[in-house]
Length: 350
Image (cartoon, rainbow, N blue to C red):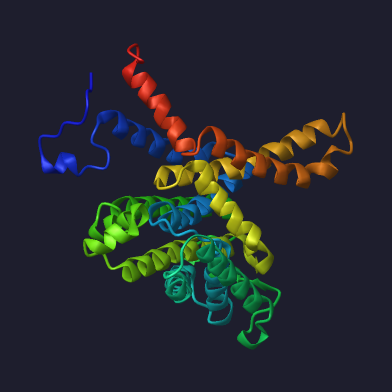
């Protein structure tokens, strides 16, 4: 029986999954991801793709909020920058997806760093208001951006949605599944290793106690700015994938409600955890789908039930956040950890 943590080599100590049950779970998840699209219908593929994009955005926000301790309510705005940058490059310049999406990610990282420069000197409520201002400024530019060639909505040419010659237009759900999940896997690998590096440990030190981190030589301005840029990079990736997946971009998809939704994902999933961001994105995406199915099932008995569905969904979001903050502030990832600990120690639960 495992008792404590014991490593006999540096490679074992630095391993992301040092024990065989962890590796087995990863293999099982990979097998499920590879098999799922061949048996799932279009509805479930759409849900899976939506979860994948939301998870990328949530992981990006978790870098800033969960790992660095800098609250942000502007993730939706940064997603809009990535979506419109990729969309404009595709619509006006005819660039293919494999070119426009990386450019959109870099542009979003630069925009995030620019908004982060004044914000890194703020804390708490002041920082939240500053990021909220960034959200509103970006949306204002998009809604009044005729000088930039931005209208109320933007349609992407189908021929630009191709990846190294493979067209993703047409059977979008199945083809886009592999792209979105591939980006999610790369995001998870990158972020998991980021916080094993010098920069990642500096961000965690800033979150735990910024004054103590500064005393031991951590450059607060540099690493906070890096956290803003990295978080915005993945927000841009999520926005660009949304643009190409949906085919039509509208600023209404990236309002303050989107920023709050992504923030709710990492709160419910678990702050400072990559897997927690994925759990939160899954929960917050499946919840409205579940309520919609319940509404359709109940429409025969209560015909007016569907008219109250938007209000029920909003109430369910708020109730879920409140209940998690009261009963499990560390989120779903802590609940999963408790389950693993129970079975690992059973029958000696004490």
